[in-house]
Length: 66
Image (cartoon, one colour):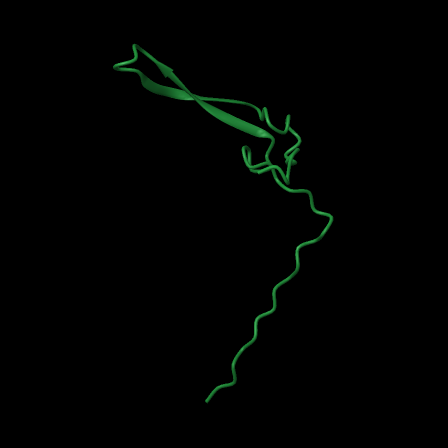
């Protein structure tokens, strides 16, 4: 029989900042744009803006809160 292989994982650096869960660390967030009356409104596109949670930094401001 073949010997069992052991895989080793690299440890994450301890000094790495947690990523923002809303924008996933990019600093940008997109919102869908809808037009029309409520019964028939449809999506026409997306608007990209700076993330309102991290204000564009990409770092989670409250990592232990959630």
